[in-house]
Length: 431
Image (tube, rainbow, N blue to C red; front, side):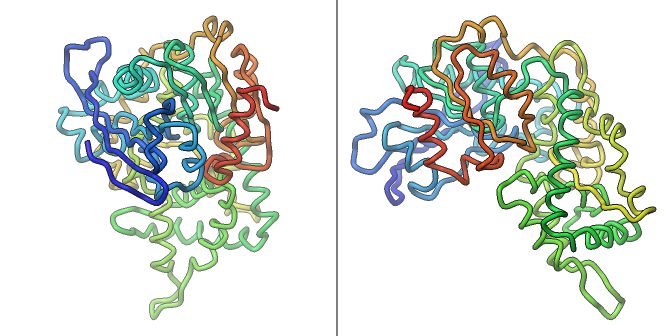
């Protein structure tokens, strides 16, 4: 355990040991990392704990520099634990380099089956008494972290004093197919809004797509394809994402002695935006987070996309219509074009075929909930369906929602203290 100072904050790095399989507590153990944050001044030990669960799946907790964003607000009344969920960050990372230690694809898939929200919540419940002395704590869940928080309410509400959720109310019973059937129309609306803002991008996107269909260049081993280019639409779910996408597209081409080519700057920017090197669990586990009810997810986003032919880039190029970007969807081709995922293709296939996922949510327990809960629901959120979220909100007794179009899915990052203030006011009946 080591401590160090940032402006306004004292951080302490903490490590915990938990079972890989909570059903076998005496079996293999893995390491979980959390970074404690308290305000400078020595008052942190007197404050209640708040554990932050990052979005994803597959992302470690944000690395803050001092008392920035919502963290500066939180440490005024909480002792904060920024938790790297299992397999992410410094918590026994799972990636193309480490997973072969488990064995072949079958062993890797069996191992990763222990990396969903049910296991993450049980990790939290082993860690909590070590920090709080047994007292319940507050959970702040962003996006997938909110999915984990709803699982927490289903499985161990006795460990919770308060739950705060930002952009992360999951459907309690939807199959992955239902999730993506709702997602593609939302993505299409975001793309239409982008093209309305930047109409010049319609032709730019068509020119880039046509070039990629013919040439398929590589950048640092990452093959650029029309489908990969379309996946840049994931940027459109953030508050500044449309502007980021526009600026990325504007320098796509450069004149060379060999003719017009895609610029190195553009190729590198696309690679950085679409690579899973820093978060491979996002690709491996993204559909598994919806796995319930004895049905495989079966590459749901890929299958459901066929129901929306307007997303077919090749067909768009045959006419004069726009090339539509896609969003938060994972496809088999990701495991062909991305060097961080290529060695894990067979593992991904086995996870997609898996049908024995345990139920994640207890609707009866949620209907009888006694824990104060507040959730920010972002109107027309590209990543989490608003209708699904509000249906879940109505299913959790006492949950109070703040439905807003002031922010996109990254509202906690963009709105920081204001978002946290609003949720705390809701659970305290101050608004």
